[in-house]
Image (cartoon, rainbow, N blue to C red):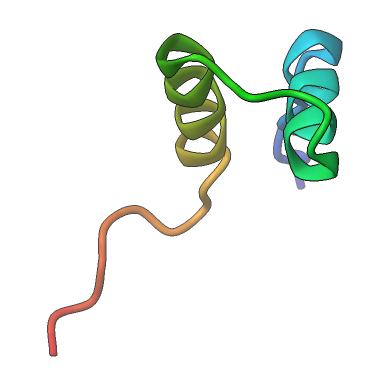
Length: 51
């Protein structure tokens, strides 16, 4: 059985996320979009379930 490719965050985005969570960095709008895109790109469950 073939393995799923692992999804990795780039070191740049990882460092940015760490700095933001620690309160050392106040992200720009572009940085927020980059973090959000990374999170959504790694999401295994696409979309939301209907209620």
